[in-house]
Structures are given as structure tokens and as C-alpha cells.
Length: 180
Length: 189
Image (cartoon, rainbow over all chains, first blue to last red; front, side):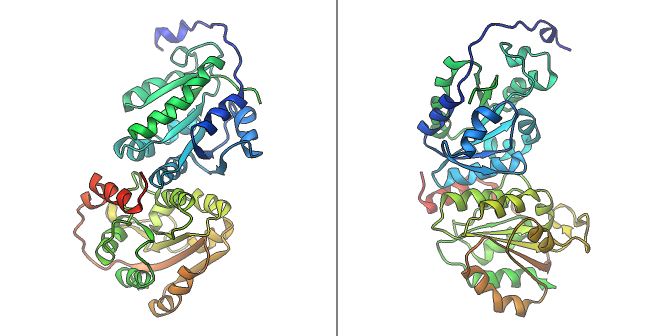
């Protein structure tokens, strides 16, 4: 186990508003959210979206489906966001490799970090399944943004816009449960 | 059993210049010679995902018919797509599966469940209402036009055999020029 895993330092962070995240998604011109449920984003994001708070929700069975659905949408000029858990991200690595990275497509993934400690950066988490996420994205050459507290929400729209402008994937890591 | 090229020719007779078609692997190499068109979407990035790309295209362009020419091994890698598509229910999506019971592009090994699995049955159980299955070319030729003329989503299993040796130049499927041509033909930035 890396030394950093034992040296996790928790910092005090403010809460995170799901409503503000959905506003950013809407402001980004996203017309579809494609999702497998994730407990981190369940109440603050997915449930309001299911009630019609934003883009059309497409429920999928497995996360790699969503990578391809977002690709198809991108070719039509429509924007999608794939709302999943990091376990689904890890399960979809080959699809992300082939579709998003090698084809250079703007696949935007919003990823809830299951079991990440609030106030601890993902790379410093004591949870193996959390602390490997950023190094894997680094290895794949995929940019990512940590959304841990309210002031981070302003990163979302520029991240989505930049992904479409550059035709590259991006990952938005949700580090604590947003409030509804 | 239906010769694959003959099945594809039967489909091609009812495909127009604005339709988007997603053929996979061995079917793709036959199809792109039968219907050479930049609206053939042949870059899927990972095995099994063609029908999911198709769902995105169908949702994004409801004014176009989107036709998937899938393989049985490919569909087995992404069975959830049957449920997802049935629920999303795009009226412009037509999913054909070429069932030959083998991973033809990967050495011809048998698929799990060869001869016993029912793809049409799985589609029905997944919630698809328009499901067809054909093993006779003449019967399929008679009905192909109606299948593609009715609203989707539609699932059709074609029991086929390979049409023989192929020249498989994968740059014709995965080359960046193919995706750029598709993008240009579709007219989206």
C-alpha cells in the first residue's frame, strides 16, 4: 500500500448542492443524461433528473453502453453526460479507451466516488477503489476535475464545453453526496 | 439458413440515402461493398457496442432511420442493450442480428449457447414488441420492406451463414477518415 494511503488528511469542506450541479448541466447545453444509479449522486442528482429537472434521462443497464450512446449523440451534435459510479468507470475502461480516447470523442462522464471520505482528495483515500481512479485516468490521458465542495461546481460547465471544443473525453469526479 | 450477403442485399433494397447503418465486423466488410456510403457508421470502438452507438444516433437524429446490422457474438457482449433500447423506444431504430453461432472475426469459435439461445426470445423478454426471426431468404425478402417501413424499435434475427472469405482491411472500419466522412455526411459539427 502506498504511503500516501496511510497519510490521508481530511480537510473541512462545505456541502454540495445537487440543484446547482443540474443548473450547470443545463447551462452546458446537455440534452441527455445517461445513467446507471450511483449512491453518491442518487438523491442529489439522479432522482431530481428522473423527476424532470433537466435533460432527458436514459436509464442504461451497464456503463459501457452509455459511453457508446454518448458517442452516437456527439456525432449528431447533441450533448450527453454519463452519470455513473467509479466502479462503472473501471468496468468500462475498454469502451472508454476505444470510443472516447482513440476516436477522440467528447464523452463527458460525471462519476460519483463511492466510499470516498469527505474532505480527502481521491488520490489520498484509504479506499483502494477510490485512490486508483486518478492514476488510471492519468495513464489513459483523460483530464478530470474534482467536485468536492460548492465552489467547485463552477468547473463543470467549462469542463463540458472544453471537452466538446477539443473533442476529448472528460471526467468530473463527484467527491461527496450532493444535497437534493 | 440465409447467405449473409443475400440477406444484406435484401436489406439494402429498402435502405435510402439518408439512413444511418451500423454494420459490425464480418457483416461490415460485406455491407460496405454492397452499400458504400459515408452514412455507414462502422467505428464502434469496442465489441458489442454498435447497438448502443445506434441508440445515441437515433435519439440525436429522430428524423433519420438508424439500422444496426449486429452479430450474435457482439450482442452477447451487450445484452443489456435490448432492455435499454426497449425502454427508450426510439421509433427510428431497427436492430438486425446476423446469427451464425460463431465469433467469425475471431477465429470462428462457437458462441456460448450456440443452437440453443433464442435472440428473438431474449428481445421479446426484454420488452421489444416488434420482433422477427427468419431462416429463409425468400420469406425475409418479402417482409424486409415492411419491417423497415413500420415504426421501430424493431428487432430482427436472421439465421445466416457466412458468404465466404473476406479481405479484412480494418482501416476501412477504424480509420479516422471514416468517422470524418460520416460526420460530414450527417452534417453535424
